[in-house]
Amino acid sequence: MKAYENQYSYLFSQEELEKSPTNRINAHVAKIFKKIHHSEPMLSLNKTYTIDEIEKFMQNIAKITNNFSFFIEPKIDGLSIAIKYKNGRLFQAITRGNGEIGEDVTSNILQIKNIPKRIDYKKNLEVRGEIFLPIDEFNQINKKLITQNKPILANPRNAASGTIRQLNPEIVKERNLSSFLYYIVSAAEHNIHTMEEAFNFLNKLGFNTSSQAKKVSNLEAIKKYIDDFKNIKKDLNYETDGIVIKLNEMKLYDQLGSTSKFPHWAIAFKYEPDIAITTLKDIFITIGRTGVVTYNASLEEVELSGTKVTFATLNNFEFIKNLNINIGDEVYIKKSGEIIPCVIGVANKKNQAAFEPFEKCPYCQEKIFFNETKLEQFCLNENCPEIKIRKLIHFTSKEALDINSLGEKNIIFLNKLGFIEKIEDIYNLKNHKDKLIALQGFGEVSINKIIASIEESKEKSLEKFIFGFSIPLVGQKAAKFIASKLLKLENVLNFDFGIFATFHDFGEKITSALITW
Image 1 (cartoon, rainbow, N blue to C red):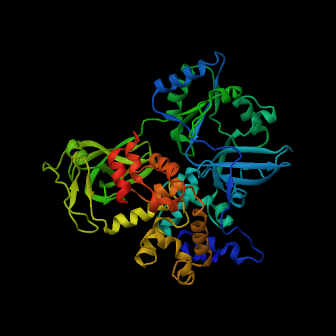
Image 2: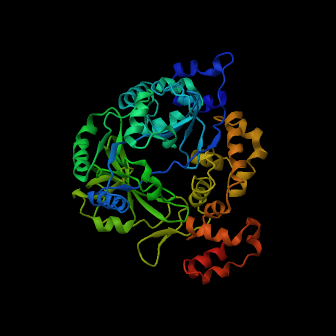
Image 3: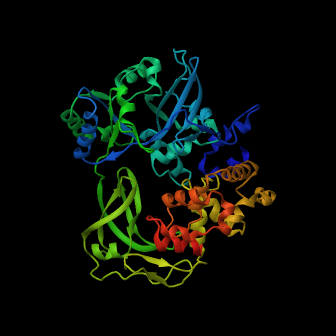
């Protein structure tokens, strides 16, 4: 704990550090958040921006019944949580994680004032909902950080997510997180058969629920809610990124089923993102793990959907050419899916010159090349330091080996010091434990967590390793198929990858990439 406080002391005030459990006798806190399997998957929601898609959603339900209604509520922009009660007492809280496995953050959830620690209900109960940071609390935290000359928090959602993973529950308590609960696992076991009944049940037990939730019966009522809420959400003390429309009658859920990602009994409607105008200050490129070149915009700071924006994506040179934009122009920007800022057009053309494509990689100074379609550019230097770093970061990413405690910043830092230059070095970090602990900004707790996370990754499925190796043209789907044929990683040396040329989804290019690898 003390090592973590030293490493991330710039994130805390002196007052927060003084109240740390490490400064109190018999203080106790979990050093590493334990991984927990969910009792049932925590799925995400299918999303739409149109009424037509909502109609299709309703038509799918109408195929199995004509008697149905809906329960609507805001889509809170926060962190999903599952909370379990035994004998009326909160005993475990788990983050969504990857939907199958989350992290035990019980000690931190216990610090949130409007989450009941005891309820007047003795049966085992699991409720799910969202943890968020109220906007006024977010603003207060940033004001405090400004006075301390520290970097401000980007947005309430990221702040809430980071706070829940604090190792010091006192800090969580001071951040004043809040919650909305809206779902009961295995509701029928509690004699609950509709979303409306679940909502009333949660209210009765003292859980915080949205005052904007309501039951509706038809498309016209849904449209009216969408229109009304667009204005209502501007005055709420929490961020939302749309509304959730759920089938009210739970008995139909099994019949409707789900995909591996989302259920067919609910859909999220998202409002078209806000658009802002600002000045394009500069254009620069970054290089990805495959060598692909991405063009980016540096912007005059502007507020968009409640977030300060200074950078946006420009995709590639062809995108810039088609929009006819250049440095100095005033441009329109919006958030793509309300997440990634993107330049979408010229608002006021001020630079009449045509922007020319970059010719050299800024990281290795080698020439970059257009592919045969002339749409993308690539750095082809296998020894480009940025490509190597991006491959290492991808290998440890959530989609690959999920070594989350290592993280992008730590990989870059340890690469500069020579500890991590290739994938094998990640698994040899444990041999340098004493040297790592001695590094400024690290400590025994943080290094133990990193090593534990690396060791856990050895148990990941073969497809995760294959995807993590950044083999050209091999995505997650291809990696899964390759793993089904390869069976074990040690078979790589003697395996005939040429067989994949006979499979429809592969062909010569992917097969050639596998053989070259």
